[in-house]
Length: 631
Image (tube, rainbow, N blue to C red; front, side, top):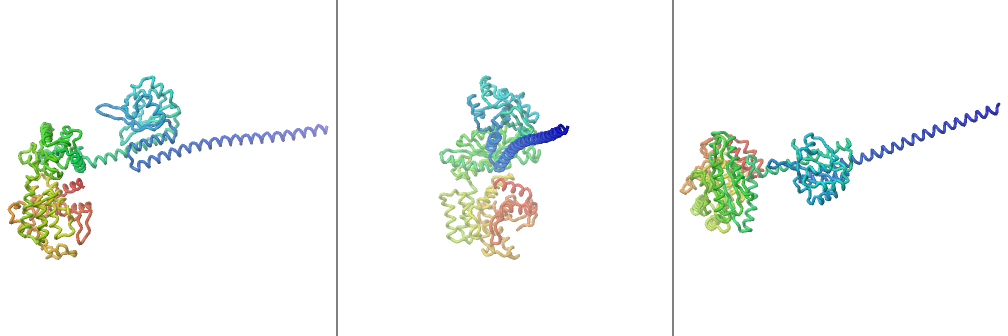
């Protein structure tokens, strides 16, 4: 019995050992299986992390490109190639929705450079990026644009057929059968609250995960931001060269384009013409009907110019109611025909309330009237004012430069002053100036006048820069046109700008160049220079009697605090007011013995501070606008 009892004990102990080993084996097996599962999860998470990292790098790459201000086309091409190459999609493209003459169509703006698209282009026998694709209101494109949601389709053939219905079914089948793509993911794009187009991804997978959808949505937002930034950049660029009211080019663009046209004309020895147009009676329209109708009249001129211009012509709004048109390759006869066509078209245009408007037009031709472009602009201007003086609503051809009168008056005045020794200028300087005025070699008469005025100014102000007088004249004339001054007033203004400071020649040089504060007696002495210029130097010269009042009052302030007569407001000639503000501006941006020159922006701010006091507020407003246009 003890034997069987011992055997039982041994069996029991063996069973206990077997159970212990079995349970341990199960524990080890469970641990092993858990490790396998954990390794699989780690591998999956690592893969997801790598994908997320690639996505973030791609998004960062796009952001860096946008901050680098690269052109939109370049950014979009890099975007589609980035997502196609880095994230494993087979093909990507960005399609824009275009509207033109009541037609809606699609255009591929950018596409990834891959074997898939090369194969498609070869099969359809033309690059798909050059095609005008069809917009089908029943397509996935219309659906995603309407829902503003990402859409996926497995019908690749049907989607291709919807945008290119001219491609045969056999070709579509060959494209689909030979492609590893299993689905198209279509993401609508919106920029500045408007539907722009779509971002398309061709995927080798049929399923679209939530994570992938979230990423593509985020990716699309970056594309939208790139498009928005590029659109804003283009808007700013356009605003820099176009007039906001009319959509025509502005003065800045006109002047830059004119330089290129002059170079071309001289190289090809081919003339071009400029048509200058000034809207008649704009002030009366504004006063009678309001500025809204004045703007309507200005926009009407612009529309007429657009309708009657050739594709190679360049029309610009120069400021206010003044416009210029460049006619490349057109002589004066052709330009007169074109100008008359514009005049007639404008006269026949019917407008709300004001019925119709007219314009005074001038024409001048480069290489025919002059080979100096500044003279051509001047001649165009003079012809335009001749049309106004003769009754408006007509076209006048410019006269040759030799027939202009204000230059002759100014030249004769300088020679008279220098010859009769009315001013204390060294003989050598006087002879040099007279020689320049009477025997201009490579200078036009007008440029000789500017040089003469600069040389005289430098005799009492060594810091004066050559070319300043010319800049003053051009700015003063542009400002005068804003106030619809007559040609006679503008011609007198030109002469006055050349002569208004000539009285300074009669003052002691040490007084004008003094670096310490002036005494009351010294200030009173300097205030005499307008009277000296007007009465002692210019009064004996009969041709400039109309100019004398302009110079005499060019230091009168709007509020009556100026000198010498202390007149105020409308009592001050507008031409005198113009000289005062132009002179002040150039004095501020020029160096002085007691201070450095200011920037144009600083000078403008100082002038603004005295608006309504030293200056007529309306004059300041126009002056600031004009300097901004010209700057």
